[in-house]
Each structure stands twice: as C-alpha cells, then as structure tokens.
Image (tube, chains in turn brown, green):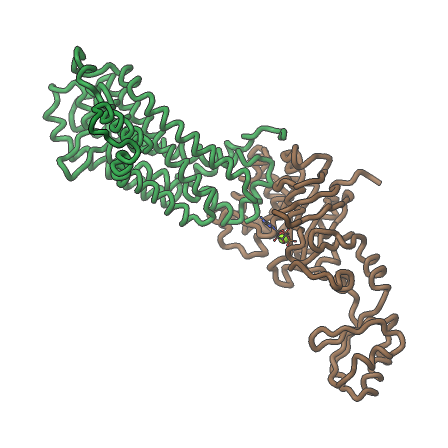
Length: 311
Length: 317
Ligand SMILES: Nc1ncnc2c1ncn2[C@@H]1O[C@H](COP(=O)(O)OP(=O)(O)O)[C@@H](O)[C@H]1O
Ligand SMILES: [Mg+2]
C-alpha cells in the first residue's frame, strides 16, 4: 500500500473542558473519497481545520501530504484545496476576478493564472457566469466556483466541508457527479456531511463521528453488512393496536422500531408477505409498505443507539 | 513554535487587492469630495489674510495651513486634525470583520499565506490610500495657493510643508490601526465603526475636559508649595499628550509655525537670553521629535495588539 495522504494520531481539540475532537486516528489513502460523517457538532469541521493548520490541536499530530499542518502550513495549503461549509466570495468582484486573487496568493503568474482559471471554470460550467459579479450567483454556483478554485490551484487533495449543504436535489446530484469526476482525476477527497444517506454513494470509505470520536470506520458495504447483519429494512404504515407485538412474533423479524407513523422492521430476509399477513391477522389496516435499502442512517442509528447526541 | 515559510508571502497581493477596493469604493469617493472641498474652502477663506502678509512673513505659504478665520472657521491644519481620523476610520473599521461576514476568511486563509500577510497587507493598503489622498490634497492646496498668490513657496516652506504631510500620514496611521483593531475585535462592522467614532469623539472634543477633571485629582495643588503648581501643570500636559490629537496639533504647530520655540511650560528663567524669531527647520524637528515618535509608537502598538488578537481568533465565522 502506498503512503497515506492524510494521517492523524490521537488528534485532540478541547474548547475549555469540552472535547470537540477526541483522540482521532485517521488514515486516508491516495485517490480515496473519504466521508467524515456525523450530526452537527460531532467535530467534523474542527478536524478539518486542524488538518489545514487553521486551528491548533490541543494534542496529537497530523500529517497531510507528508507535512505537519502546524509547522509547515504553507506546504500543506499549497497542496490542499479547501471548501468551507459556508463558502463566500467577494460579491463585488466577478468569478474570474475572485479566482485571480486566489491564484496570485498561490503565487501563479497572471498568464499561468488565466489559463488555469479558464480551464477550471469550463470544468464546472461557469465559463460565462465567470464574467459576472458573484453577487448574482446562486448557492450552487458559488459551490461550483469553490470547486473551480480547487481545480485552478492544482491541489492533489480536496477537503470539502458539507459540500451539499443548502443545495436543492438537482444541484446535489450534479455536485456529487462533479466529486466523482474529481476522483477519476486521481484527487484524494475528504468530505464531511451530516446527510449520511446522501453522500454514501460517492464515498469509498466513511468514518461515523459522534461527539468527537469515530465510532465506526470502513467501506460503506462492509458497515452495512457488519452492523446490520445483512438485514432487510422494511417500512410500513398501518393502523391498529398491538401491531408491534404481533410483528415481533413473525419468524425472521429481528427488530421493530417506530418512527412517527412509520414502523421500521429489520428482518433476515424479504418477508413482506408474512408481515402483511401478520398485520391483517392482528386486525390492522396496512396502508403502505416499502422495502428500502439499508442506509448509513440505519447504521448510525443502530450503532450510536442510546448515546445521547451532541446535536 | 517555529513556522516555516515567509510570514509576509502574499502581503503584496493582499495589499494590491485591498488598494483596488479602497480606491474604487463609493465610500472613498465621498470622503475625497469632503476633504477636497475642505481644502479649497480653507484656501479661499484665508487667502485674503495671507496675501496681506506677503512681504512681512518669510513663511507666508505656511499661513495657508494655519490661519483660522476668527472664531468660526478653524484653520486648515485643525480641519485635518478632525478629518483625517474620519477617513482612517472609514478605511479600517470593516477591513477584517467583513472577511468573516462575507465568509471569505477561511477560504483565503486556506491559501498558502499566513495571517500576518493578510493583516499587514490590509493595513498597508489603508495607509497607502490615506497617503495618496493626503499627498493629492497637499499638492492641490499648494497649487491653488501658488495660483492665487502668484509666487512660489520657498525651499524651507516646502520642507516644512512636507514634514507636516508626513506627520499627518502618521497621525492617520494611528487612527487606521485603531479602526483595524476594532475590526478584529468586533464581528459587527457597525459596532467597530461606533467604537472607533466614540474614541474619536473622546479625543477630538472631550479630552480637554477629561484632562481638566483628572489633573487636580492626580496632582493636587498644594497651596503651601509653589513648586506643586509646576507639577500639576506637567501632569496635565502629560495627560493631554495621551491623545493623538494633541500630538498632531503640537507637531503641526512646530512645523508650520517656525516661531514656535517650545511646546511645554516655559519658565521666564529659561527664556532669558533666548532670541526670538524663527527656528531653523532642524531645530523644529528636534522640538517635536518626541511627539512624532509618540504617534509612530501608537501606530505600532495598536497594530501589534490587533495582530495578536487576530492570530488567536478562530477562523470559522
Ligand atoms: N470556538 C469554539 N468555542 C467553543 N466550542 C466550539 C468552538 N467551535 C466549535 N465548538 C464546539 O465543538 C464541537 C464540534 O464542532 P464542529 O467541529 O463545528 O462540529 P461539526 O462540524 O461536526 O458540526 C461542537 O460541540 C461545538 O459546539
Ligand atoms: Mg461543521
């Protein structure tokens, strides 16, 4: 295996007596899309800021592209493109002018900068909009401009904090597609999100975060299999008394939980027929049944069951 | 802890961008208009009196700056004492917090630069804007005076005028550093502007009052000890010199009024044997050297405090 691109050892950040990030051990391999997932307040942003040398860790060490973000922040920042969770540009400047400023800060000559900017903007389909002031950009366009900045910089690592936050479903899909295309270029990508289900499809590996600690880490399929035991998730809506008890007696059902009007059933196989019969047998009315795929949300819910959430 | 790489890498880029923003902003247009109208007003208001003094005063040109029109219209130099802080505050009060409010701070600091470069670049851009504006104003006023008086300024007049120009830039630098300090400490630009203006009001209008009230408390006059009066006066003077406005006013006086031989309390014994008449330029410089140094120290001190605070700040908005 090649040298990891990002590695942390016992990385810790305390705000007062509160541990925002608690002895984090993380390794990310080159070319990987790694998801840092967890609810708000789990410590994702704090971790990212420490990787970039923008926040000083209380203890522990980090290594990004072979450099220490604390002592060699310029080397790290030359190689890493960062998209903050709320990304802003100078509204009075055009998209191109904004990128030109960044390019100058990165030390590119203006000729070099203009070539890189044109290429990057074309890639995120902002060539035309690039001539307009950023004030008129939509949220999705700003997000794409941020990706263009990372491309322009020629970064080999992209760190994206909540990249799909605030985007409509259509823009989210396009954005995830963009992330996939960056991966094809060989970029290593670390992204954070509290929308587990949304990003699980682009991530090679994920770490599930809760209260500054990684609870689970691994490939999405492995987590689904290991934690949920390869179970099927069946969601139903039904009216009638004592349905939970009746369902739990059905052979193959391992768990029944209620989520508002929806009953969520974990079972060892697709036993929708048995479930329907059990409900009718118990005198209930079945109004909806859906056999969904298990998602990371299910894994998260199962794993951190009983742990009071920070968010 | 040792950091690698130049602390000021990128400062020039930041400065050029900020300079562009400053020079193209509507805010600066308005201030320029205000300052130039004041300059023109001062020349037109005083030119009659100044013209009368041609031939009597070897430093007639400097009178353009120092002549006050009765009780109502202060001199041009006094006007600048009011206006320069306003311009400097307008340049600095939102320079750092606007990056947080526009969510650009973390993105910019993720580029290969240190925070030092951002703060220093912004300060230099503000100072340059101020300097350009004051130089333009200076040339404008001198030019107008040449036209109206029909004679050129003498060499020493130019030198004293330039010294005054440099002092006014340093004075502006102190207010710029103060405004930037507030722009680091307050996330709301409005709060930073109000705090800066409050300090300006204090020094421009109320400081004399504060000095009058505080001096007898700090150094009461002992009716049985005549020397205590001297002490009281000295304490009052020291207090009054805590204000950058006082430092600037005294500097102005020494540079523009060559007859000024002393800026403090003078005892008759010290004056015995002193000849009256204008001081050579070099001696005027020596006279206000402490004041000029005080202004520069204020700039550096305020900037350092802002720098330390900024280094410790969380980047997330
Ligand atoms: N400047 C700060 N001072 C005190 N606590 C903070 C500060 N910044 C973040 N925190 C706390 O650290 C924890 C982790 O925050 P964060 O990393 O932003 O979480 P996430 O990005 O996963 O939502 C939160 O509980 C938050 O309240
Ligand atoms: Mg966050």
